[in-house]
Image: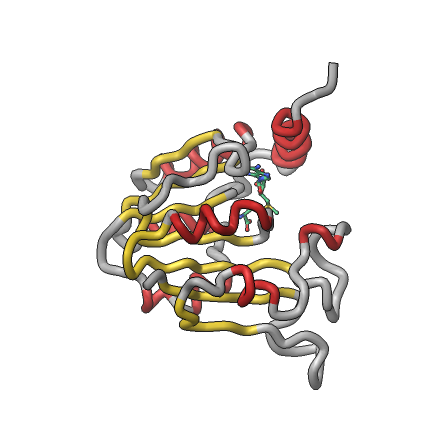
Length: 200
Ligand SMILES: C[S@@+](CC[C@H](N)C(=O)[O-])C[C@H]1O[C@@H](n2cnc3c(N)ncnc32)[C@H](O)[C@@H]1O
């Protein structure tokens, strides 16, 4: 019998998180650049989701900013580790082992959604619809065009030029950055694109 996609995916990620050893210390967990740099845009309260959270650095950051933070990931190992970290920091997180492709967020359910280093094009409409009025999407992930070899080996998980703008065209654009190979590729924001958009 064929193994369901979801099981194969969770096994793959569980192995990776298991291999990383225990938590690596909460202090090593920094939120993704787009969230850190544009944190001043966050609402003072509300419901926030770190989608495909991994060890949940974004979720912890959101919780530290007074938001009711949720972290969803397909890897039970990552979520288990995240729970340990959250407890050690005395932060209240709502974690869930969840395949977000099979079960994307419900419509109109979050004020903030953060997605970093995860790309599944088919659920982009669900992610956008999951934002409440004036809700914000912070997105950052790898691009096909890159100056350094970092990120996934398959281009399937990488953005084409301006693709994030296209995928999020129903949102108002607040911030977009994609530097490609322009100028001195040894500096700047390379290998990834970032976006902050607001639901109308
Ligand atoms: C490259 S990691 C990024 C983790 C984190 N967002 C970050 O930036 O460090 C990709 C994450 O996506 C999760 N993932 C992959 N497929 C998923 C799915 N269908 N549903 C939920 N999480 C998934 C993996 O378990 C992994 O934690």
